[in-house]
Image 1 (tube, one colour):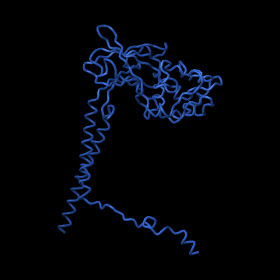
Image 2 (cartoon, one colour):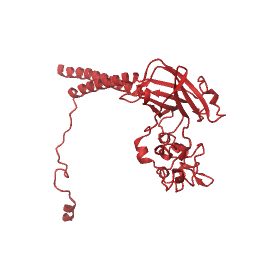
Image 3 (tube, one colour):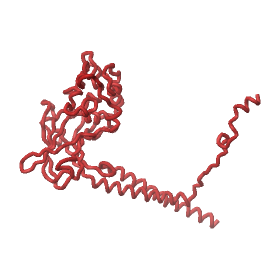
Image 4 (cartoon, one colour):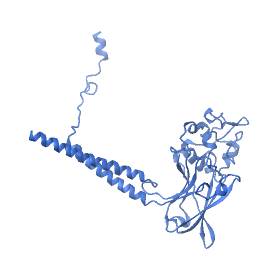
Amino acid sequence: MKSQQAANRPDNTAFTQQRLPAWQPMLSAHFVIPGFLLIGMAFIGIGVALYITSQNIQVLEKDYTGTGQYTACSECADMQTIPCICNVTFSLTTLFTGPVFLYYGLSNYYQNYRKYQVSRDDVQLWGDVTKSPGDACAPYQYIDNKPIAPCGSIANSMFNDTFSLYQIINGTMKLVPLDGKGIAWWTDYNIKFRNPSAQGSLQDAFNGTMKPVNWSKPAYELNPSDMNDNGFLNQDFLVWMRTAALPDFQKLYRRITSGDYALGLPPGDYVLQIEYNYAVKDFGRKKVVFSNVTWMGGKNEFLGVAYIVVGSLCLVMSVVMLVVYAKYKFADENA
């Protein structure tokens, strides 16, 4: 019995016998109070820098739902004509510093709803359209007993309004180039999504499948002029498939980075021509957002305010602890 216990006994080393040297900090007022003071000052400094930087970011928003107080595209709000072309005009008095990012925004749109988020087939999106779509895609799995590609509620509800931007110069409309390359996450384009392979064209690879119910064209026609931006690898499709965490969100549509607009949008009059296809009147609103970015990203005042608040609380706590420490320390000395 003793030999068995000896065999099961851990080796007689400092590690196995838990005899390693240890260090336990002794938290005293001499360390805690200055620590809170330094942390508070650092947080306030970072918060002020973030807040000031956020204030310098230019943002231009235009609601084009066409209902309520916003009349832009009101002729298209009822969706009686699809597509419906409408224009949103705006003027700039100063340079809108580039690079300029164009986003579309939706409100009261719950992409974080659990059944909506899982309504996709990752095996299919990785390029295998030969297998039956997963049950999570229901009710957008089949049409006439043929699998839908891409299947599921996320793909079926893909945003499909399109935008063209023009600058008005001496009464003529000059097209502003919009760059849609690389707007999706690198991991989505290079790892998570793949087009189905076939001996012939991309259209041949989708033989035997059906387009989603709400799509006007199949996946292999999303951008037939650029095969690197077509099918499941279409940048707009990839951006939409990465679901938003909040009900009010913005997704990147294009960048303005080239030609006469590499430095930004110069002062003047502009027309945003919209092909209105996406109905939102019954549940929310939609808008376009022009914005530039800095080292901290897009406009976000909350982050700077949060740092300032936490830093201020640390400073207040350091003062409170100093008063308490001084009171009891002197009381003990006098005793």
